[in-house]
Length: 98
Image (cartoon, rainbow, N blue to C red; front, side, top):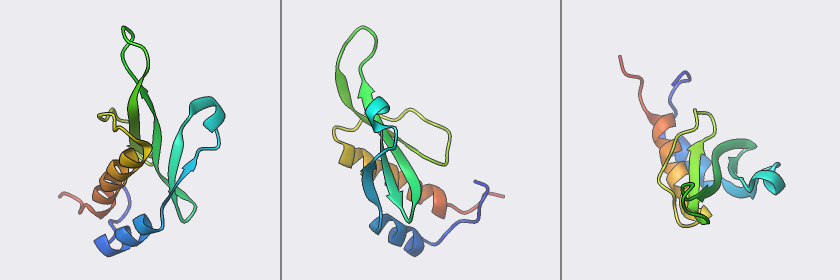
């Protein structure tokens, strides 16, 4: 993490103000953003089964300011948002390791 950690209280205030909104490229990607104070915190997109299966199996998320990671699909957008915000909070309140 390159920036200074924030307090847990400040992180909670940011999370409480967050909204789940359609991403600007939603018509093409079906992605959603968790936004607070004009900043995108978490990106959520549909998750699809492997090549041998068809259909959607939930929603995946990643922290917008981090490299995209593979997470276990969540059953709903809202649950993906909660999981993503939890990870975001842990990442922004984590103290630097020496």
